[in-house]
View 1 (tube, rainbow, N blue to C red):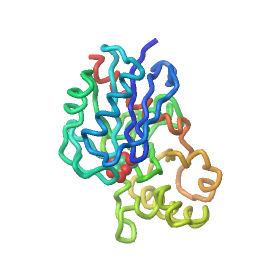
View 2 (view 1 turned 30 degrees about the vertical axis):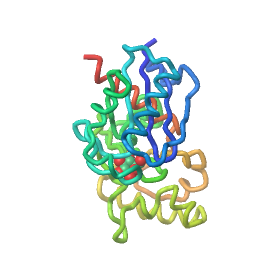
View 3 (view 1 turned 90 degrees about the vertical axis):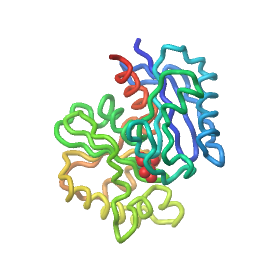
View 4 (view 1 turned 120 degrees about the vertical axis):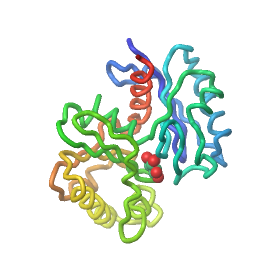
Length: 250
Ligand code: BGC
């Protein structure tokens, strides 16, 4: 069995689990720890360290850490939904120092897209897949013929003058108490825009709300299929683990 460890850092929770990379399944129960406030590099790195201790992750197991921000050459470019002090931080260097293990840091939506490509809704799909996550923000992954194009950040496309995630993220539906119909209208506007810009072959919709996909996905009309993610909330962990394994393999 090939094992790697995934950690998914989010605005409300930090989750970790060991992953069997032949099946994309966890080999142990996932552990979720509430994201500390303030969610600074120091407090979040401490939680990552607790996860590694809890699972007694062996030294040679690669660790993939997913992060809700674009990560270029290991460094956070900007951040919308965690403490602003993350901007400019080299996440890999910080984590390697704190947890004393070889690890990589990647964008959370990119990791989720990779997991769906390897094990879920985008498996064996030819052409362009746009995988999105609807949560606190909107994350995106562009995958062309199975290859990830990193850091696409399509949740920050401007719609009506604001970032799309401020209009159509799952959190906004709750905060503004939108009905499923009202929210679906906003999603229609967003996905139509992506459809026009990229002419994809498939949209995959992830994030916690994707388990209620029957309430909003059937309302959307696009030029290609739009389907729920299959790995749901485990996608970040699984994709992070898979990317870490690939990275350290050579
Ligand atoms: C961030 C993305 C992230 C998404 C989902 C956005 O605000 O800019 O990097 O993938 O939220 O967490």
